[in-house]
Length: 427
Image 1 (cartoon, one colour):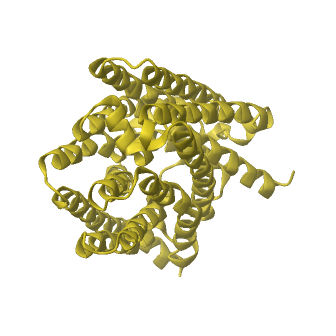
Image 2 (image 1 turned 180 degrees about the horizontal axis):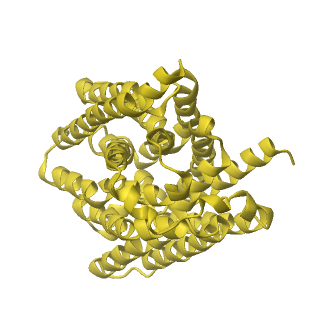
Image 3 (image 1 turned 90 degrees about the vertical axis):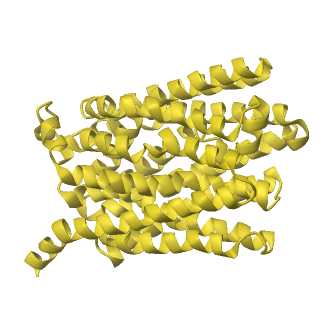
């Protein structure tokens, strides 16, 4: 097998792993109403599930990043996928047992906390570092773009099967049964991913994805990373980009609660917004970063503006427009947020982060970058619980647009400090 074919096959396999493992903790992206109604919880309590997940991730990101710098990626992926399968199955059993609401919700909080060990410990950092090692420094945007395209393809297929299982199991008329079978199908896919990783990454993948001996991690390097202000600045960018990407899930309840689409119709829109757009947006983001702007930071300056405008447009159209028009407009922020999110970790090489501490730097950036899951969903859920009609949703969308402005400001500064001088010197 030639090197290019092996490179892209590895990216596809990594995309399969990532596409399956994150479906469950973020199942509210597609099954927002079933989650609330089956567990008998409020919007705020729904947000608290992701808060528990984020707490686990924040605790584990740095030790996970350090361990990922010393651990074989294949072993990390297999172990993580296996744990995800077990925990997803445990939640399905919780639904099936028809426990009292408070008990079922308490168990769910524990499961969402523990799922961080599957997807937020060594898995996340190892898979990102593997992507960086696979490609050259000049094609980092493209590598991440291809990975997220594979990730999006897999996630879209899984989400579509989940939605089919939901409808086959009862749908809106028997939400508990439908939700149970949807969760069972999620567990089936992470189990399948575990098996395929074991088969296709056997033997030679250990070498392909390992760090060169001269680039091995040393614990003293952590201090260097912590003292680098660019790491913290790019972490804030990650926070804002991921905050917009993650909280674009609120377009789903907006379509059901305000626009009055069915759970299935809104779920289809969610699949399109969160997963299908990856097929176009992630590679497009990579092309824009590498070929058009020739810098991820430069692309972020422009992309942040476009994303902010697309969100504001949903607010300006309001609720009086045709439902299909509104539904289509909610897809646009998903497209551009993925164009940014899909390549955001490729900014690491632009701020001069060495490969040997990439896992640690990613761990630190991930702590800050994924803080939105810790509190934004709870805050936004509280806004919805206290607001009438569309006003709460418009408040949420306004906050997300403000995040885009922050991205533009910080990336403009980092571009001027790190990228522009190098371009001038190379002329």
